[in-house]
Structure formats: structure tokens, C-alpha cells
Length: 477
Picture 1 (cartoon, rainbow, N blue to C red):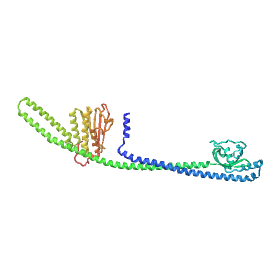
Picture 2: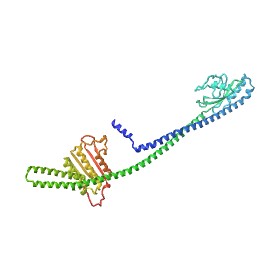
Picture 3: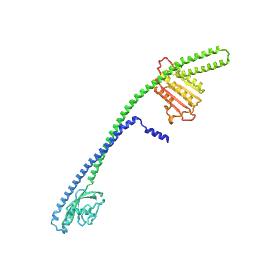
Picture 4: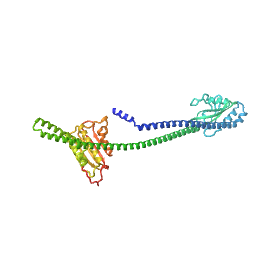
């Protein structure tokens, strides 16, 4: 669970460049989102007004058409109706037949109700004829018969309700125009279904939604393209700046390493040529004094102890001088230098060391020799301090990729800081990593967290650090 929280925390912790990118893009994303909402809302409002105007225009056309149809019907029966008495059954029958015969279109017809609610004419829906339909309502509860009679009584007008369509039997929206024959107490009317109008309006709304959606996609696409452009530009600038910074850092690191090696060489020379010679001179003086003091055992013992301690000091100074800058590395090459390093390590620590090397065809350049030597030196130092190893294997070989150094021990393994297996966690390991990165090589460290599993350190130097074959100076390494 702790590891999970750590990973989540690492995911949340973003770099400074990412924060700048987010700060730059979040306002753009918010602006695009608001623009999309505003454009969509305004487009819908404008389209809705236009659709409503179109719907009103189409319905008004239908109403005018109905009024014309009813005028034609009244004209057709006006003579019969005008000469008939209110109770003239024959005239009523003749008018009913004439209206029933007046069909138009696929669903058009004329209907007649008397003011008591009885249906007298319904040519396309004959089941209505002869029955009283007072109180008839559609599926939505809209009154039909009573409302038609009321409109006819008051001089005529329009009414809209849902009604079964004769051609399909499906219930559709219908607009009727009704007028009254007041002498006969008849409500005569005709109607037209407006499902085609509603379909056109629905199609127009769907087309508007499609256009708005498409426009939104265009806006989002443009915004994404802009974000990608900003991101790529930022990445390009960031990578460019990072390359420049890495190059400068690499130069600085190389300069530090060069300065360290120069300083180590200077100190090594001072120790070897200065302090070591001074100590040798003091030892010579003490030995000369020992020969002159005679046979006094107390004085001779004290001088012997001093001379022995001084000899050990001289050896330690020489060892430190060799560690700082081994002369054999410059004189004989990397192989002999590593051989001397492992021999001294085995003698000093008592740990058995197996050293294996081959002869390179080409000579390693100075930077590669120093880096591999320091890596081996650091690895042996870590083994001496922490590994509790019994045996160590050091190999230096060449392959198609370049020079390859491998250090293996059978110790207790490494304890990684902060539970992370990162070669750059410790100071010594970080120095190894930086040295090998300066050469463009690779460093691998294989070790378990605990247990007698040992550690493997592998350093690879590329072929670019191998000198050309025509160089007559050869290195046995």
C-alpha cells in the first residue's frame, strides 16, 4: 500500500515545465469550452426561431388550404342548402351524399356532425356514421366533438387534435377547419394531417443538432491542433534547452573530472616526490642513529619501533599516492593497472580476487582508461566496506560494442536508499554513473535487496573511445 501511495505521489508531482504548460493550456481549454457552449446555445436559439417560423408558415399554408377546401364544399351545396327548409330531409340527404363524395388526396374528406354530437358524414371512416360522439377526446385528452360543435356555433374556426390517419391507421396530428350550417344545426368541416410538417420540422431540428455537433467538433479539433502545436513547440524548446543544458552540464562534469584527476595527480606527485622522500630521509637518519648508539637495548628497541612505524607510514603514503593516480595506468595501460589494484586489494583485505583480461587491438583513450579504473576502484571500495564478500571476480574484455568491465562479488547485496533500485542513489554509484555517461556508455548494477546473493557491476565503454589501429602505442588490457 505504501508503494502504491508513493507511485501516486510521484504521478501527482509534476515538473516545473509541465506546470507552465498546464498554466498556459488550461485558460485555452476553458476558453474553447465556453466558446463551444456559447456558439452551440446561440446556434440553437437562432435555428429554433427559424424552425418555429418555418413550422408556423407551413401550418398557415395548411390552414389556408383547408379554408379553401371548405369554401369549395359550401359552394357545391349552397344551392341545395339555400332552398331547403330546416326540416327538409331530402335536401339534407342530398347534401350529405354530395359531401361524402367529395374526397381529395390520400386522406382528405369532409365530415358533418349535428349539434347534438351525431356523426352524419365520414366517408373514409364510416364506423363513425350514425353514432353520437359527444365527449369524444383524443389520446392527450383534447376534446374533439364538443369543441368542433362549439366552433361551428360561433361562426367557424380551426382546431387541432390527434386522430387516426385513414391511409395508415396510425394516430397523427390533424388540423381541421369547421363551419356551421346554422339552419340545419350542422357542423361541417375538413381536416389535413400535418405529420409531414412535423417530420420536416424534426428533420430540420436534427440537421441543426448535427451542424452544431459538427461545428463543436471543428472547434474542439482546432483547439486540440492548437494545443498540440503549443505542446510540440514547448517540447521542441524544452528539448533544445535541455540539450544545451545537458551539453553544458556534461562539459562541466568532464571539467570537474579532469580537474579532480589533475589534482589527484598533483597530490600523488607531491606525496611521492615530497613527503615520501622526506620520510625516507628520516628513516635513513634513524637507521644511521641506530648504528651509532651502540648496544643499549632500550634505545635500539625504541629506534627499531620508530623505524618500523616509519616504514609502514612510507608504504601507506605510497599506497595513497598510487590510489590517487597510479603511475602504471599512464605507463603500462589499464590492464596492468587493474591487476595491481586487485592484487593490492586482495593483499590488504584478504578477499580472494580473480582478475581476467584480454589484449585489445586498439588502445583505450585516456578518458576511458581513467573512468574504468575509477569504476573498478569504487566497486572494490564498496565491496571492502559493505559487501562482506569472500571472493571477487574482475574481468576486462573487448567486444563489438567496445570495452566491457565486470565486477562480481558474493557478498550480502546492496540496500537501496528509499526502497528504490537506482544506480544514482549513492554518492559512489552516482560518480560511477556520471563517469560512464560522460563517455556515452552504460552502467548496470544487479543486486537483490537482502540475502547472500552478491552484486554485479557492468560498465560498457563504446567503440568511439578506442584509438585508431595506426596508433603504434599498444596497450595490454
